[in-house]
Image 1 (cartoon, rainbow, N blue to C red):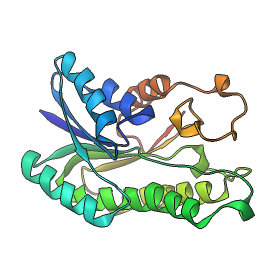
Image 2: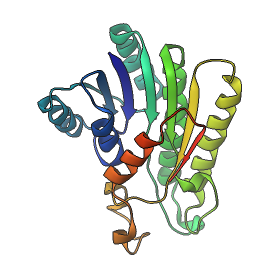
Image 3: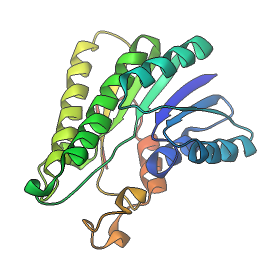
Length: 218
């Protein structure tokens, strides 16, 4: 049975990726900070006869990642695919961003991706998929630090592509625009959410283009 590990899997795109990648031959391992949200997704997958398990983990905390990775690697040995999906954004004029907001974006978006990838790299047999967004491709108004964190994940992904180019392990960067998800619940940065793709639409596009390529642009 294949094992696919997804961070940020309790809601939004992470939950939709869990649904779209779930199958009779694939075990979905859901990672997130809120157990109740993760359990809801697990129950849904199990009702369809598919296998799913969940682990609570704060990916921005090194010790939390190390502890959960030891448990998962001991239990399942091999992870076929790691999907780094967890992310957070705070938007507005650069001078108005607070230390807590800056720390959250750097710690979750960048350090969380680094911690998870490093913790599982020797157990991954197939690929790592990093959900970056188009913020990793160009600067955007009132998204300065969010964009900086995503540019950094892009650099990490491209560097690992080079580092592992002689191996069977592949690294894919996913660049998509904004989605209508809880990500925007406490923000008025997006005025018209009706123009955004749904998480389900984006998840379906990612899976349909998931063929080992270096980039997926949606």
